[in-house]
Image (tube, rainbow, N blue to C red; front, side):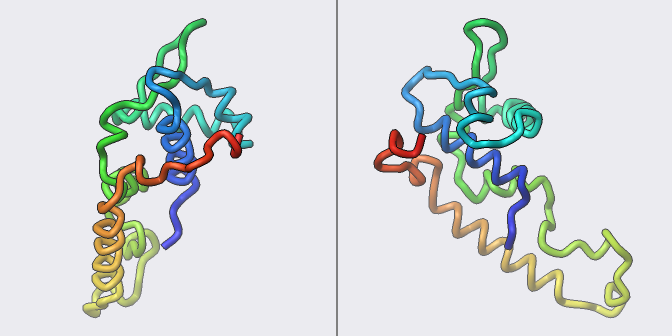
Length: 139
């Protein structure tokens, strides 16, 4: 399964923020520079994360982005499912009319079973399980 870019960028942001010391904020510019990702892409990511209470944002001179307790506690599978924003991300028989749909095709069912297994497997972990031993050497 291939995750979309939005999920990839969101995971990078959350992993980055999770490594920060308590109450240490990051800015959009810092994230864009460190990840070499467009600031505009990150705005959308951070807005979504804030709307889902995974980060806290504060505007202004002393503003920034902080990871929330919810983000630290959510299971990775549930997080990925939320970030993918699609209940059937592998096969969508309605996106383009499928000739097999009315013939009891089992492809979607098989892929949905695999997707659920993927999510359940990831639900054994939290963001803290993705921690790097030498974070400072990365940035």
